[in-house]
Image (cartoon, rainbow, N blue to C red; front, top):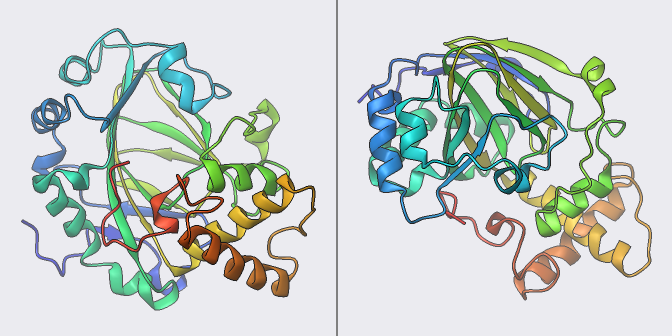
Length: 305
C-alpha cells in the first residue's frame, strides 16, 4: 500500500474552506483496487446486499435519483455491467465500500494523509465512506444532494460535473434540505435547465476531481467514453450540527410553525441544534429511522444502510 504520508489527494489545503466548492487533483487512477477486474470481484461480493445500485442510460438530470433504478431498469447485474461498461448502457454504483475489509484499507489510505488538514478547519471527522461509480458513455447522474462532504475523484474517462454552492437557495431551498435530512426525501429537489448557468462546471479527466460540501446540489454527464470515479465522503461536528438543525426545522414546519432561513439567526440555529439533538437521541423526528445514522452515531466509518 501507499505510504500514509504520501498526498494522494491534493487541493489548496492552506485555503481550504469546508463550505466552498474546490477543485482537486489525485493519484488514485492507477490504484489496483480501482481497476475493472478488482471492481468486478467487489461487485460479486456485493451480491445479495444493498451495496450496489444501478440504472440504465436514459436517465435525465431531472429524474428522481431514488427512483431512477425503477424507472430505468438496467436489466442486468452490477457484475455484468462492470465487466463491459463501455457497452452496458448502464450506470453502476458500488456503495459503502468501507463495509468490505479490503476496500476499507482504500478508504483509510485516502484519509490518512489529509485528515489532519481537514481537522484543522473542520474538526470531528467521522463516518468515512467510499463509493465507486462506473458509467457507460452518454450517461447522466441526476440532480441531487448528498448528506456528507464529498471528495470526488475521476479515475478513467471524462465527465462534466455541475456543482452549485450549498448556500444557493435559488437552486435548492432550505425546505428541500429539511426533507432530505429528516427523511432522506429528495422528491422536492426539482431540476430546471436554467440552473446550468449558476453552476460551478468541472470537466474532469483522470487525476482531477472536485470537493463538494454537504448538500451541494450536483449533476453529472459522462462524455462519449465510459467513466469510472471514486468518491470518499465524511462527516464532521459541523455537518452533524447542520443536519440536526434541518431535522428540527422539518418538525416545526410539520407543526405549522415557520423557521427563519438557516444561518440567518444564530440563536435560533443554536436552539434548533440543541432541541433536535434531544429528539434524535430519544428516537423522535429524524431519529427513527433517521435520514442518516450519522445524526445519531459518531462511528469512524459510515453504516452500510
